[in-house]
Amino acid sequence: MSTDLCGTRKYPNIDEAAKNTIIQRLRDNGATVTGNNPWDADTHNHGVKLRGHLQSETLSVTVTAKNMYVLCRKIWSELDKNIPKLQVLPVEAAESIVFDFHEEQEEAV
Image 1 (cartoon, rainbow, N blue to C red):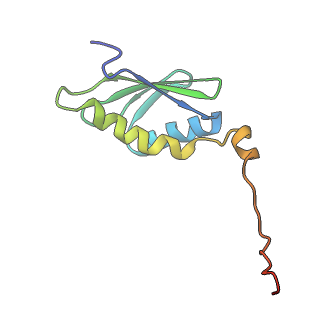
Image 2: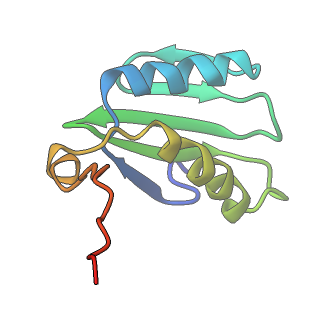
Image 3: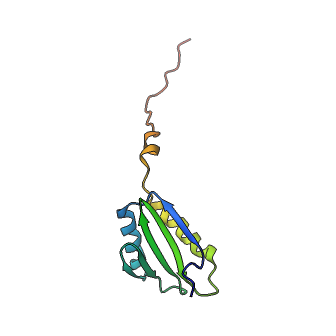
């Protein structure tokens, strides 16, 4: 059995709290998760098994098993639509946020 069936994806800006939320959501959806970092998840869903590793706020996820009829793009589609919801905003990006509640005044003619 290959340990890298669909490649590995990296998700930046994932902190420890987000990693723990991902693990908890996997468990809430019926997965058995072992380990902490790295962690292995048996989703009990079409043979899909994942390995996750968090390093320097980058989460690496590898598909370690799947049934032959499950397409890699389906697995990545599910992960890609959910993991980014937990990404923390980098400080550099936060600095570019400007709240401007000032109403522009019309010039009197």
